Image (cartoon, rainbow, N blue to C red; front, side):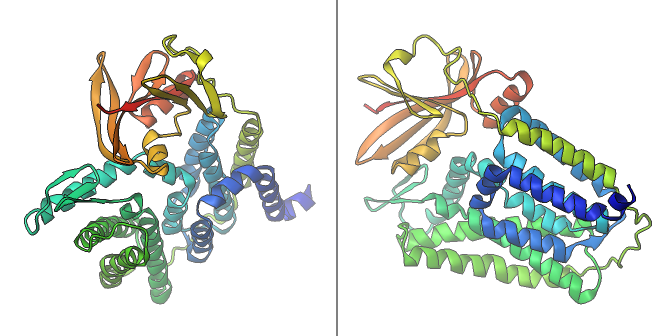
Length: 410
């Protein structure tokens, strides 16, 4: 027993490594999402952590329990991977009493769960940015019209692609800001308050919006929205001019003032770490079980599944003379799938059919326009919100699916 007490740090680290090995598929899934960002965030957490008397255990443990409960019920790899990262942060804090709020935010941002959240807002973000650009440019140049993310200038059509939202630049900007904050703390040998960190992060988000706005403006003025050297050069210049340089100027007014904290409780809380390891171990066992989505269970009989076929473990396809129907798991958002196959989204809006709201979008490929209706479904009720339908799944554990009906627009 004495030997265990003397080597508890080593034992917890070894246990963490074994847990990561046990969850190899989940870890591989998470790292493939953004390896460099995750590695830099973890290094920043170790290098930039500071001593704190704030009860970090309560905050991190609460997040861990929520993430693992959702992962257990929904088999969500992204949340389970994030829980593994938070466990590493918790073990590090319990033995050093050091924590980095800035790096913690970066870990959340570079996790795949943030990407999933961002993907489901892709269309809304693109259209809002494009409409803002249209309202500005129409006063200075002739724009025939705008349809979703398509600008029509002198008979030519310019389409804004997903890269112009700057997701990678958004995360890179926040990581750059986190590094600047950490360098300032080391230089002054003082620390920023939580309020200062939150304010600075919000300013970075505003700068990112401004950067993407001027990126789209510049690309339209140059009539360049294709993936080429000019396209990427404009993106990089906007990132430097509208994010990095303003951050370097603003950081001068964010001087750290808090002296190094003398930690009053230096005793490591091994029990908390052990309990969280047990929770993650149980979830890890559940995650290894084969996932059964049951997306055809309780399906409306009007969909003749006997005429359809599986084109993947999560996608069922039914072809009719006038309509193409896809029944999928909710993670396969149609707008992402369609744009990935070369379709241009012209219009997206909510419509009401039979007193239930669903999504309607118009898209185009090879000069042919298509009308597409889609919605999430749980039981007999339709939903337009991914978060809402997943919450229903979390509460009632009923099969949920996404239905997409597409036809040529007459």
